[in-house]
Image (tube, rainbow, N blue to C red; front, side, top):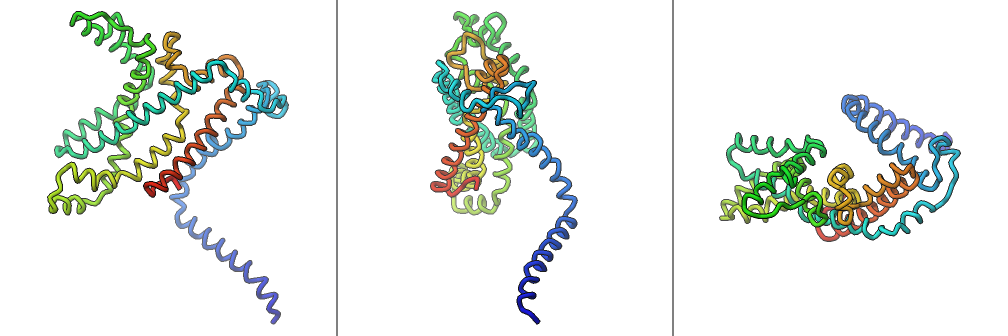
Length: 319
């Protein structure tokens, strides 16, 4: 027998066997793949296909001409964006609010999860969790309405309390110095309970035997938190922190836009609101896309750098 024919046939038979095993595995687990299909379609339709539209950042896009017939202008829109006179204000406001979110908003659900974990009454714990989860399901329009009811000069509860104590009412919603505090506070109130779910799940995954051994060794609540709970939560904390760093230029347009007014532009005007005001309302879709692409590239670079730093220091990372 010619050994060359055997050698030539072996790779084909091997690949055919692998393909048959893969098909058999997929068929055996077809229910799981069917459940996976909607998620895959969602990402394809709403995440990957829209990436093709990024080309309009390099075009003088005309909605009537479409992608294929619009004039190519190179980096014109990036140059226009980077030469915007108030660009420093936009970047400064965006980075400061993002920094405040990392410092104040991000640790809030971690602390809440730890506190909820210490509750011994399951009925009381469920009630507290339900109350804290509810704000997540409210729109930012409703949250702004609550903020107006609390902080309004005319009818706000806070100003009525100030006047009752003999003070002068304060225009919290119209003063630039209060804008960032209101944004961070409302964000914590709305999302803290919902975000704590992930950290509660991380705590639930810690073996109870570790706590039993710690109690036998005489460790109190604080030491148990430092040496058992916190290390057990660390992988979830680092992954979410890295994702937050990757979206450091994305603040949540709806929240900022609803609270923003002409008197608070100096501290509240960010990249998202500028893109909406100039790009969408002004009909400059190419400029809006260029700003979005700029944010994506910066976020990706920060994510890669932060992931490498995390892997080097804590051993935890996204990949």
